[in-house]
Amino acid sequence: MRYLITGTAGFIGFHLAKRLLDEGHYVVGFDGMTNYYDVALKEKRHAILERSNGFKAVIAQLKDRDALDKAAELAEPDVIVHLAAQAGVRYSLENPRSYIDSNLVGSFNVIELAARLKPKHLLLASTSSVYGSNEKVPFAESDKADEPMTIYAATKKSMEVMAHSYAHLHKVPTTAFRFFTVYGPWGRPDMALFKFVDAIRKDRPIEIYGEGKMSRDFTYIDDLIEGVIRLMAVPPDEANRITSDTYADTLSRHAPFRVVNIGGGQPVALMRFVETIEASLGKPAIRKMLPMQQGEVPRTYAAPDLLIGLTGFRPEIDIEVGVRRFAEWYQEHY
Ligand SMILES: NC(=O)c1ccc[n+]([C@@H]2O[C@H](COP(=O)([O-])OP(=O)(O)OC[C@H]3O[C@@H](n4cnc5c(N)ncnc54)[C@H](O)[C@@H]3O)[C@@H](O)[C@H]2O)c1
Image (cartoon, rainbow, N blue to C red; front, side, top):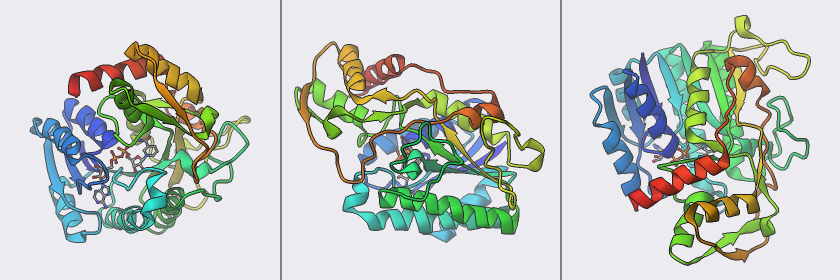
Protein backbone atom coordinates (compact mmCIF):
# COMPACT_ATOMS: atom_id res chain seq x y z
CA MET A 1 0.00 0.00 0.00
CA ARG A 2 0.99 3.62 -0.47
CA TYR A 3 0.87 6.01 2.47
CA LEU A 4 1.20 9.75 2.96
CA ILE A 5 2.03 10.41 6.61
CA THR A 6 2.52 13.86 8.11
CA GLY A 7 4.75 14.23 11.16
CA THR A 8 7.17 11.39 10.33
CA ALA A 9 10.08 13.11 12.07
CA GLY A 10 7.96 13.19 15.21
CA PHE A 11 7.71 10.49 17.83
CA ILE A 12 4.54 8.70 16.69
CA GLY A 13 4.93 9.33 12.95
CA PHE A 14 8.44 7.87 13.04
CA HIS A 15 7.24 4.65 14.66
CA LEU A 16 4.26 4.32 12.34
CA ALA A 17 6.35 4.91 9.21
CA LYS A 18 9.03 2.49 10.42
CA ARG A 19 6.55 -0.29 10.99
CA LEU A 20 4.89 0.22 7.58
CA LEU A 21 8.26 0.35 5.81
CA ASP A 22 9.38 -2.82 7.62
CA GLU A 23 6.23 -4.48 6.28
CA GLY A 24 7.20 -3.49 2.72
CA HIS A 25 4.86 -0.54 2.15
CA TYR A 26 5.71 2.76 0.42
CA VAL A 27 5.66 5.87 2.61
CA VAL A 28 6.00 9.56 1.84
CA GLY A 29 6.73 11.43 5.06
CA PHE A 30 5.88 15.11 5.35
CA ASP A 31 7.41 17.07 8.22
CA GLY A 32 8.44 20.68 8.83
CA MET A 33 11.12 19.81 11.45
CA THR A 34 9.73 22.52 13.73
CA ASN A 35 12.01 23.64 16.54
CA TYR A 36 9.50 23.02 19.36
CA TYR A 37 12.02 20.48 20.65
CA ASP A 38 15.48 19.19 19.67
CA VAL A 39 15.58 19.10 15.86
CA ALA A 40 18.58 16.74 15.97
CA LEU A 41 16.32 14.06 17.46
CA LYS A 42 13.86 14.56 14.57
CA GLU A 43 16.68 14.34 12.04
CA LYS A 44 17.93 11.10 13.59
CA ARG A 45 14.45 9.60 13.34
CA HIS A 46 14.23 10.57 9.66
CA ALA A 47 17.74 9.25 8.99
CA ILE A 48 16.55 5.84 10.20
CA LEU A 49 13.51 5.94 7.91
CA GLU A 50 15.70 7.00 4.99
CA ARG A 51 17.54 3.68 5.19
CA SER A 52 14.44 2.13 3.60
CA ASN A 53 14.06 2.36 -0.16
CA GLY A 54 10.33 2.73 0.26
CA PHE A 55 10.64 6.07 2.09
CA LYS A 56 10.64 9.57 0.60
CA ALA A 57 10.69 12.71 2.73
CA VAL A 58 9.21 16.11 1.98
CA ILE A 59 10.46 18.71 4.46
CA ALA A 60 7.99 21.57 4.57
CA GLN A 61 5.37 23.30 6.71
CA LEU A 62 1.70 22.34 6.55
CA LYS A 63 0.85 25.88 5.48
CA ASP A 64 2.81 25.30 2.25
CA ARG A 65 0.09 23.91 -0.02
CA ASP A 66 2.46 23.50 -2.99
CA ALA A 67 4.66 21.26 -0.86
CA LEU A 68 1.62 19.25 0.23
CA ASP A 69 0.68 18.85 -3.45
CA LYS A 70 4.20 17.68 -4.23
CA ALA A 71 4.02 15.12 -1.42
CA ALA A 72 0.66 13.95 -2.76
CA GLU A 73 2.09 13.52 -6.26
CA LEU A 74 4.99 11.51 -4.90
CA ALA A 75 2.78 9.40 -2.69
CA GLU A 76 -0.39 8.78 -4.72
CA PRO A 77 -1.65 7.54 -1.37
CA ASP A 78 -4.18 4.83 -0.63
CA VAL A 79 -4.21 6.10 2.95
CA ILE A 80 -3.35 9.47 4.50
CA VAL A 81 -2.39 9.68 8.18
CA HIS A 82 -2.15 13.19 9.60
CA LEU A 83 0.01 13.27 12.72
CA ALA A 84 1.93 16.53 12.28
CA ALA A 85 0.82 19.07 14.86
CA GLN A 86 1.92 21.51 17.43
CA ALA A 87 1.58 19.17 20.41
CA GLY A 88 1.96 19.81 24.14
CA VAL A 89 -0.48 21.13 26.69
CA ARG A 90 1.83 23.50 28.58
CA TYR A 91 3.39 25.20 25.56
CA SER A 92 -0.10 26.15 24.37
CA LEU A 93 -0.21 28.70 27.20
CA GLU A 94 3.00 30.32 25.95
CA ASN A 95 2.54 30.21 22.20
CA PRO A 96 -1.14 29.71 21.36
CA ARG A 97 -0.79 31.00 17.79
CA SER A 98 1.46 28.13 16.73
CA TYR A 99 -1.48 25.79 17.52
CA ILE A 100 -3.78 27.80 15.27
CA ASP A 101 -1.20 27.71 12.46
CA SER A 102 -0.36 24.01 12.62
CA ASN A 103 -3.47 22.38 14.02
CA LEU A 104 -6.25 24.46 12.48
CA VAL A 105 -4.83 25.86 9.22
CA GLY A 106 -2.38 22.99 8.76
CA SER A 107 -4.98 20.30 9.44
CA PHE A 108 -7.46 22.04 7.14
CA ASN A 109 -4.88 21.92 4.33
CA VAL A 110 -4.47 18.17 4.84
CA ILE A 111 -8.24 17.61 4.99
CA GLU A 112 -8.66 19.61 1.75
CA LEU A 113 -5.90 17.64 0.08
CA ALA A 114 -7.68 14.43 1.05
CA ALA A 115 -10.96 15.75 -0.42
CA ARG A 116 -9.17 16.12 -3.76
CA LEU A 117 -7.15 12.90 -3.64
CA LYS A 118 -9.96 10.72 -2.29
CA PRO A 119 -7.83 8.15 -0.47
CA LYS A 120 -9.50 4.99 0.85
CA HIS A 121 -9.09 6.34 4.37
CA LEU A 122 -7.98 9.56 6.06
CA LEU A 123 -6.86 9.20 9.68
CA LEU A 124 -6.17 12.14 11.99
CA ALA A 125 -4.52 12.37 15.40
CA SER A 126 -6.66 13.98 18.07
CA THR A 127 -6.13 13.76 21.80
CA SER A 128 -7.60 12.78 25.16
CA SER A 129 -7.23 16.48 26.04
CA VAL A 130 -10.54 17.10 24.24
CA TYR A 131 -12.29 15.51 27.25
CA GLY A 132 -11.09 18.45 29.36
CA SER A 133 -11.86 18.00 33.03
CA ASN A 134 -14.74 15.57 32.51
CA GLU A 135 -15.55 13.82 35.76
CA LYS A 136 -17.31 10.82 34.27
CA VAL A 137 -14.74 8.08 33.78
CA PRO A 138 -13.72 6.26 31.75
CA PHE A 139 -13.85 8.81 28.92
CA ALA A 140 -16.09 7.42 26.18
CA GLU A 141 -16.05 8.86 22.67
CA SER A 142 -19.76 9.68 22.94
CA ASP A 143 -19.20 11.81 26.07
CA LYS A 144 -19.43 15.56 25.80
CA ALA A 145 -16.07 16.94 24.70
CA ASP A 146 -16.63 20.58 24.07
CA GLU A 147 -15.23 22.20 27.18
CA PRO A 148 -11.52 22.27 26.30
CA MET A 149 -9.13 23.59 28.96
CA THR A 150 -6.39 24.72 26.54
CA ILE A 151 -6.07 26.04 23.03
CA TYR A 152 -4.27 22.77 22.20
CA ALA A 153 -7.42 20.80 23.04
CA ALA A 154 -9.60 23.41 21.33
CA THR A 155 -7.67 23.13 18.05
CA LYS A 156 -7.80 19.32 18.12
CA LYS A 157 -11.55 19.28 18.74
CA SER A 158 -11.92 21.83 15.93
CA MET A 159 -9.94 19.58 13.62
CA GLU A 160 -12.34 16.73 14.41
CA VAL A 161 -15.40 18.80 13.53
CA MET A 162 -13.83 20.29 10.39
CA ALA A 163 -13.03 16.74 9.28
CA HIS A 164 -16.62 15.65 9.90
CA SER A 165 -17.93 18.36 7.57
CA TYR A 166 -15.49 17.35 4.85
CA ALA A 167 -16.25 13.66 5.28
CA HIS A 168 -19.90 14.57 4.72
CA LEU A 169 -19.27 16.86 1.73
CA HIS A 170 -16.57 14.84 -0.02
CA LYS A 171 -17.28 11.31 1.23
CA VAL A 172 -13.71 10.54 2.29
CA PRO A 173 -13.88 7.91 5.06
CA THR A 174 -12.26 9.62 8.03
CA THR A 175 -11.20 8.35 11.46
CA ALA A 176 -10.05 10.71 14.21
CA PHE A 177 -8.08 8.87 16.90
CA ARG A 178 -7.92 10.26 20.42
CA PHE A 179 -4.52 9.28 21.77
CA PHE A 180 -3.82 8.95 25.51
CA THR A 181 -0.31 9.92 26.76
CA VAL A 182 1.88 7.94 24.39
CA TYR A 183 5.38 6.99 25.57
CA GLY A 184 8.33 4.79 24.63
CA PRO A 185 11.75 4.81 22.90
CA TRP A 186 12.38 7.85 20.66
CA GLY A 187 9.83 9.71 22.80
CA ARG A 188 9.38 13.44 23.11
CA PRO A 189 11.79 15.51 25.24
CA ASP A 190 8.94 17.79 26.38
CA MET A 191 6.99 14.93 28.00
CA ALA A 192 7.20 13.85 31.65
CA LEU A 193 8.91 10.48 31.13
CA PHE A 194 11.79 11.97 29.14
CA LYS A 195 12.17 14.92 31.51
CA PHE A 196 12.07 12.75 34.64
CA VAL A 197 14.59 10.19 33.37
CA ASP A 198 16.91 12.97 32.21
CA ALA A 199 16.67 14.86 35.53
CA ILE A 200 17.15 11.79 37.73
CA ARG A 201 20.22 10.72 35.79
CA LYS A 202 21.69 14.22 36.12
CA ASP A 203 20.82 14.52 39.85
CA ARG A 204 18.44 17.37 39.18
CA PRO A 205 15.01 17.67 40.87
CA ILE A 206 11.92 16.52 39.01
CA GLU A 207 8.92 18.83 38.99
CA ILE A 208 5.75 17.02 40.08
CA TYR A 209 2.64 19.04 39.34
CA GLY A 210 -0.75 18.81 41.00
CA GLU A 211 1.10 17.75 44.19
CA GLY A 212 1.33 14.31 42.55
CA LYS A 213 -2.43 13.76 42.65
CA MET A 214 -2.95 13.42 38.89
CA SER A 215 -3.33 10.22 36.90
CA ARG A 216 -2.81 9.41 33.24
CA ASP A 217 -3.83 6.54 30.99
CA PHE A 218 -0.44 5.82 29.40
CA THR A 219 -0.17 4.04 26.04
CA TYR A 220 3.07 2.33 25.06
CA ILE A 221 4.11 3.26 21.53
CA ASP A 222 3.99 -0.30 20.09
CA ASP A 223 0.44 -0.70 21.39
CA LEU A 224 -0.53 2.65 19.91
CA ILE A 225 0.88 1.77 16.50
CA GLU A 226 -0.92 -1.58 16.57
CA GLY A 227 -4.18 0.27 17.29
CA VAL A 228 -3.54 2.76 14.47
CA ILE A 229 -2.74 0.02 11.96
CA ARG A 230 -5.78 -2.02 12.87
CA LEU A 231 -8.05 1.03 12.62
CA MET A 232 -6.63 1.82 9.17
CA ALA A 233 -8.26 -1.40 7.99
CA VAL A 234 -11.71 -0.31 9.24
CA PRO A 235 -12.72 2.83 7.31
CA PRO A 236 -15.96 4.16 8.80
CA ASP A 237 -18.89 2.71 6.91
CA GLU A 238 -22.46 1.67 7.71
CA ALA A 239 -21.33 -1.93 7.12
CA ASN A 240 -19.15 -1.77 10.22
CA ARG A 241 -21.47 0.20 12.51
CA ILE A 242 -21.35 -1.34 15.96
CA THR A 243 -24.48 -2.05 17.92
CA SER A 244 -23.85 -2.66 21.57
CA ASP A 245 -25.90 -2.34 24.75
CA THR A 246 -22.90 -1.17 26.73
CA TYR A 247 -21.19 1.43 24.58
CA ALA A 248 -21.88 3.71 21.63
CA ASP A 249 -20.40 3.73 18.16
CA THR A 250 -19.47 7.28 17.12
CA LEU A 251 -19.99 6.54 13.43
CA SER A 252 -21.81 9.65 12.18
CA ARG A 253 -25.34 9.35 10.79
CA HIS A 254 -24.37 11.93 8.15
CA ALA A 255 -20.84 11.11 7.07
CA PRO A 256 -18.29 8.29 6.90
CA PHE A 257 -16.66 9.67 10.03
CA ARG A 258 -15.81 8.17 13.40
CA VAL A 259 -13.87 9.15 16.53
CA VAL A 260 -12.01 6.36 18.38
CA ASN A 261 -10.00 6.38 21.61
CA ILE A 262 -6.68 4.56 21.56
CA GLY A 263 -5.97 3.92 25.21
CA GLY A 264 -5.92 0.86 27.45
CA GLY A 265 -8.27 2.07 30.19
CA GLN A 266 -5.74 1.55 32.98
CA PRO A 267 -4.82 4.93 34.42
CA VAL A 268 -1.63 5.18 36.46
CA ALA A 269 -1.29 7.54 39.43
CA LEU A 270 1.50 10.06 38.93
CA MET A 271 3.38 8.94 42.06
CA ARG A 272 3.31 5.31 40.91
CA PHE A 273 4.69 6.51 37.59
CA VAL A 274 7.54 8.28 39.43
CA GLU A 275 8.27 5.17 41.53
CA THR A 276 8.31 3.04 38.37
CA ILE A 277 10.91 5.33 36.82
CA GLU A 278 13.01 5.30 40.00
CA ALA A 279 12.90 1.49 40.06
CA SER A 280 13.92 1.21 36.41
CA LEU A 281 16.87 3.57 36.92
CA GLY A 282 17.76 2.10 40.33
CA LYS A 283 17.95 5.63 41.70
CA PRO A 284 15.58 7.86 43.71
CA ALA A 285 14.35 11.15 42.32
CA ILE A 286 14.73 14.51 44.05
CA ARG A 287 11.05 15.43 44.16
CA LYS A 288 9.85 18.99 43.87
CA MET A 289 6.11 19.09 44.51
CA LEU A 290 4.28 21.89 42.72
CA PRO A 291 0.64 22.98 42.39
CA MET A 292 -1.47 22.04 39.42
CA GLN A 293 -0.56 24.03 36.33
CA GLN A 294 -3.07 26.10 34.47
CA GLY A 295 -4.79 24.12 31.72
CA GLU A 296 -3.72 20.75 33.19
CA VAL A 297 -6.46 18.14 33.79
CA PRO A 298 -6.54 15.91 36.90
CA ARG A 299 -7.01 12.63 35.08
CA THR A 300 -7.27 10.90 31.74
CA TYR A 301 -8.90 7.50 31.47
CA ALA A 302 -9.84 5.88 28.16
CA ALA A 303 -12.85 3.71 27.52
CA PRO A 304 -11.31 1.20 25.08
CA ASP A 305 -14.58 -0.57 24.16
CA LEU A 306 -15.04 0.96 20.70
CA LEU A 307 -11.41 0.26 19.77
CA ILE A 308 -11.84 -3.34 20.94
CA GLY A 309 -15.18 -3.66 19.12
CA LEU A 310 -13.71 -2.43 15.85
CA THR A 311 -10.32 -4.14 15.97
CA GLY A 312 -10.34 -6.84 18.66
CA PHE A 313 -7.33 -5.09 20.14
CA ARG A 314 -6.67 -3.35 23.45
CA PRO A 315 -3.37 -1.75 24.52
CA GLU A 316 -1.78 -4.07 27.05
CA ILE A 317 1.88 -3.29 27.72
CA ASP A 318 2.41 -2.60 31.45
CA ILE A 319 3.86 0.69 32.57
CA GLU A 320 6.79 -1.17 34.24
CA VAL A 321 7.77 -2.83 30.96
CA GLY A 322 7.28 0.32 28.91
CA VAL A 323 9.22 2.59 31.25
CA ARG A 324 12.09 0.09 31.37
CA ARG A 325 12.25 0.00 27.57
CA PHE A 326 12.30 3.79 27.45
CA ALA A 327 15.05 3.98 30.09
CA GLU A 328 17.14 1.46 28.12
CA TRP A 329 16.73 3.47 24.94
CA TYR A 330 17.59 6.71 26.74
CA GLN A 331 20.78 5.28 28.28
CA GLU A 332 21.91 3.89 24.94
CA HIS A 333 21.01 7.05 23.02
CA TYR A 334 22.35 9.69 25.40
N1 LIG B 1 2.49 11.81 22.16
C1 LIG B 1 1.32 11.85 22.80
O1 LIG B 1 1.22 11.47 23.96
C2 LIG B 1 0.09 12.36 22.09
C3 LIG B 1 -1.12 12.34 22.79
C4 LIG B 1 -2.27 12.81 22.15
C5 LIG B 1 -2.22 13.24 20.84
N2 LIG B 1 -1.03 13.27 20.19
C6 LIG B 1 -1.01 13.76 18.81
O2 LIG B 1 -0.33 12.81 18.00
C7 LIG B 1 0.38 13.47 16.95
C8 LIG B 1 1.84 13.08 16.97
O3 LIG B 1 2.40 13.44 18.23
P1 LIG B 1 3.92 13.21 18.59
O4 LIG B 1 3.97 12.87 20.03
O5 LIG B 1 4.55 12.30 17.60
O6 LIG B 1 4.47 14.70 18.42
P2 LIG B 1 5.84 15.24 17.78
O7 LIG B 1 5.91 16.69 18.17
O8 LIG B 1 6.98 14.36 18.16
O9 LIG B 1 5.58 15.12 16.22
C9 LIG B 1 4.89 16.07 15.47
C10 LIG B 1 5.69 16.35 14.20
O10 LIG B 1 4.95 17.29 13.42
C11 LIG B 1 5.85 18.24 12.87
N3 LIG B 1 5.12 19.49 12.70
C12 LIG B 1 4.54 20.25 13.67
N4 LIG B 1 3.95 21.32 13.14
C13 LIG B 1 4.15 21.24 11.79
C14 LIG B 1 3.78 22.05 10.70
N5 LIG B 1 3.07 23.19 10.87
N6 LIG B 1 4.14 21.68 9.46
C15 LIG B 1 4.86 20.53 9.26
N7 LIG B 1 5.25 19.73 10.27
C16 LIG B 1 4.88 20.08 11.52
C17 LIG B 1 6.98 18.38 13.88
O11 LIG B 1 8.18 18.80 13.26
C18 LIG B 1 7.06 16.98 14.47
O12 LIG B 1 8.09 16.22 13.88
C19 LIG B 1 0.13 14.96 17.16
O13 LIG B 1 -0.95 15.34 16.34
C20 LIG B 1 -0.26 15.06 18.62
O14 LIG B 1 -1.07 16.19 18.89
C21 LIG B 1 0.14 12.84 20.78
